[in-house]
Image (cartoon, rainbow, N blue to C red; front, side, top):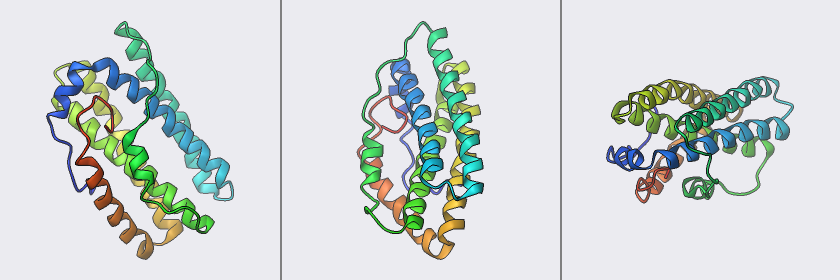
Length: 193
């Protein structure tokens, strides 16, 4: 369903289980960044009414997820750590050329968001199936469904505004590029690392 070209090595969950506070902190900041991305799309492309409506809803949902992760940290006696650079995102952004028309910029941002949501969904599925901590497994199962919905929504908007004939080949190229990035990741307790 997600179309990812390189699945996460299931052994990544073992790294996560040894560093639960790290993954939860990273996850919290991923939710904050997702909300920020939605708000940025509203600010940058206010003329797309349907997109604005969906981004308002997503920004609220992502902030709710941030609150949920933060509450989970507190419940476990942990504190929200510092945000770290996300090497995955840094590398992913290199795929997209600078400039272009407003429509091209919008489509690129939608594809970027779709792929991040797809990878998050895939990682959350893995956590939901492999974590020994059943509370966390259930938590990630519920969030996985949300990420899948966001992934399809972003990709559908990209196709709507850019046209399938242009977007689908670019999406496939992006998936191949992302697989190359993922070959060097998966060794840290980070949502995308």
